[in-house]
Image (cartoon, rainbow, N blue to C red; front, side, top):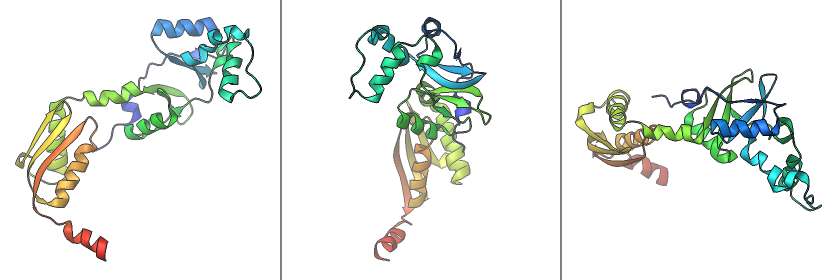
Length: 228
């Protein structure tokens, strides 16, 4: 059971701008397309990103006419002041581009978005060419997966093919992405593995595990870990 990759979730049609695009062109591009950031290309390859945050210093510092940050101002504040005087994409863009490979798993992409604090990652192939963009919203779409589709995958793939359990001996219910498992399995380890596999399935919100084992095969193992 393979986890979805970035290539299956990303948006392939990406609005871009050239490094020479004017400040006003950038504002118009964001407005016309209802986006909050645009990758900047130089010779067809991404070299930076211009977001709404990169354009705001123009107003914040009134085009660089207000007093410059003091000697002890932070690096971020000084950078915003420099951006306030920019007239092209090259002047105001943030670089380097936060990128990710197309074959990266969805969970790894989610961790990257969380750790970097950005709203989107630009997808680049092995040659450095831009092939798509992955946003937080693209990842959240996984949770729109149909309940009946999830139920079928859990019953047939997880129980039938991975655990070798008669899929119709276990009752699987899915409501709003929340999975409830009822039925009897042979071993406690199978109960725990089943819950782990279901929880890791893209689109699952939560799991109520009511599976009952015929015997607990994990007691001896745990006692050995404690006393051995």
